[in-house]
Length: 355
Image (cartoon, rainbow, N blue to C red; front, side, top):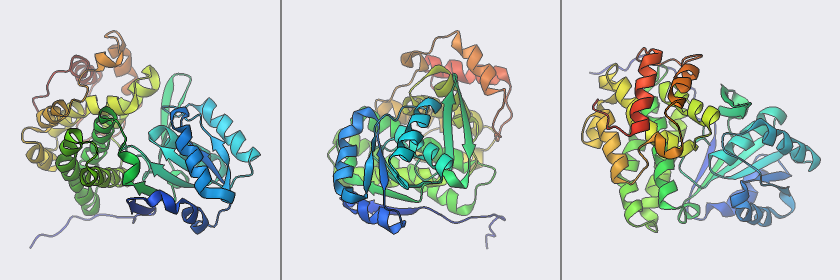
C-alpha cells in the first residue's frame, strides 16, 4: 500500500466554463457574480473582439479599454483604472492573452473589481493569483487572493484562428507552468496529476494543431491542457524558470510566450539534475532526457530556440544574470550567478540541453 505524503490542497476557487461557443454565456457570467457594469478589456489588436463582447453584454457593458500591453506596464494600468472608475464599472471582462489578463488583474487588485477572463491563447495566466507588472525597466511579481479571477470562460472556437506560431509558443508557456508545478516545494498530489495531464494533453494535441490548425478536437485538447497548466501554477510556488522569464521580459522587453518557450528546456534540464524523480515523467513523455526531450519537442513544432533571435544581445546576458540573482525565487537546485549565465548563454545560442 502506498501512503501519500503530507500535503495541503486549498481547493480551486475560480469557476470555469469550458466548451465550444461558450462566449455566448458572458452576460450570464457577469450576472452570476452579482455585477451590473463590466469594462471590457483587450489589446489594440483585439479591439474588434472587445466590441463583440460589448454587443453580447448589451446593457451590462460599461465600455471598453483596448490598450492592454505586454508585461502589464504600470502607466497603462493607471489609465485603465481611471477609465474603470469614470465608466462606473463594478467588474472587468478581459478577452485575449496574457497581456489583457494581466491588466484585468492589475485593475482588480487596485479596485476590488471582479474579473471574468476569456482566454484566446494558451499561455495560461487566467487561473492564477499571480500578477507581474513592469515599471521603470524592471518587472516585479506578487501574489494575492484579490488577483485571482472569479470566472474564466474557455471557448475553443476563439482559438481556431490563432496563428500556428502563437499557438506553439503560448502552449510551451503553459507547459512551463506544469513542469515547474512538478518540482514546486508546495506541490501536492492534485497539482501533480493536473501538471502531468496538462503535459500529456499538449503532447497529444499540439502536433495535430500544427498539422491542421482547424482541427477542433485537437484545439480542444490543447485548450484543456492550458487550463490544467494554468491551474497548476495557480496553486504552487514559482521557481527558476519563471524568474528568468520575468527578468528577460521586464528588463529587456522580450516577448512573453516566446521567451518561455526558449527557456523551458534549459531551466527544466538544469533542475532535473536535482529532482530526477519528479521530472522523470516529463522525460518519458518527451522521449528523451528532460531538457533534451523538451528541446526536441519545441524544435519539431517549429518553436523559436534562441534568445538571440528575439533581439537579446550577448552583452545583456551578464546583466540578466545579475538581476536574476538579486532576489531569486526558491528553486530545487541551488545556483550561482555563473550557473545563470551558463543557462542564459545556452538559451541565447539555442544549444540543445543534454540533461
